[in-house]
Amino acid sequence: MEPGNETQISEFLLLGLSKKIELQPLIFGLFLSMYLITVFGNLLIILAVSSDPHLHTPMYFFLSNLSFVDICFTSTTIPKMLKNIQTENKVITYGGCITQIHFFLLFATMEIFLLTVMAYDSFVAICHPLHYTIIMNPRACGLLALMSWMMSVLNSLLQSLMVLWLSFCTDLEIPHSFCEITQVVQLACSDTFLNDMVLYFASVLLGSVSLTGILYSYSRIVSSIQRISSAQGKYKAFSSCASHLSVVSLFYCTALGVYLSSGTTHSSQSSATASVMYTVITPMLNPFIYSLRNKDLRRALRRIIGMALYTGQLSLG
Image 1 (spheres, one colour):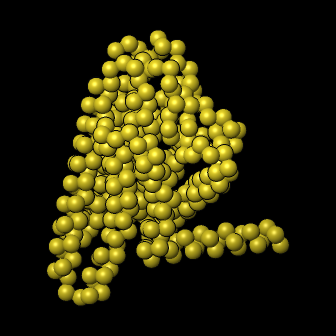
Image 2 (tube, rainbow, N blue to C red):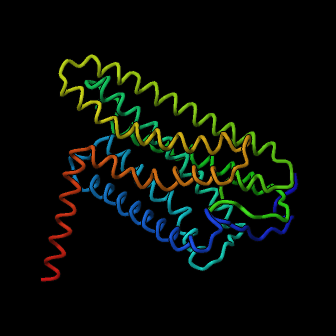
Image 3 (cartoon, rainbow, N blue to C red):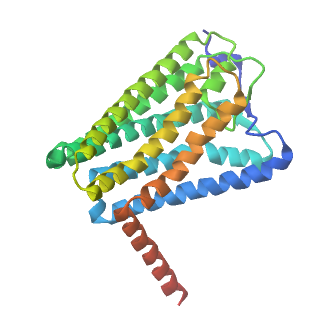
């Protein structure tokens, strides 16, 4: 396998979601709106958790981390896509493409770890409530977050560096709005067996281990909820987990579908659609799902918005 820099590749072409010129303004407006909603919504979650002492718990600590990762996740791809649409320029540099691959994998992997840790936190809170403060102490939460970041960095660094050693052909068109690693590897002229194996191994390992942990946690949670005598107690326990389960389902079904089917199908349209679901839709919906189903978070958000409106009225007066 020859090093990629010997091929003198300087840029790729991002074809985007549609080649129709008349649809570009609609796509631009739609994704700009979704990006602003994602950033604003997740920033509100972070502000609410950091400013309200009642929310300084492990669950909200991981939720604020998830909100931060969602902002970074969408910022890795959408701004470049919006710039390309606005300037009618589909070019992304070779270095920019590799950088985008690295940070995309970093935040995608971090999302997987955070969803798994949040499922474990719910499991401990419902199944072992008396030992919750001992098990999920600040030191343990910090270590879980640190380990998640370290493993995410290692995974993204390994896979992005391996792309550097690929040689590319003259066809450098990527049928996506961003540099997704599966599409970039398919453009290579050199042998991609090692890249494919590492990608599939990482996808299966991360996906299966985390999904197994989530399913095990929620199977125990459901079993514990069934033993609760009061209907109100059952509803409260279930509602606290329902939002997380809906986010997990949406993220895993689309993300794993993209990576595990990349070797068996070459339908760029279906792959691009699934990619939009877990890179744009899920981060945008997370703040709504968690805030609408959480009374404490809604109260903190109302307080922040009320203070902002009051400050604005004072400045206008």
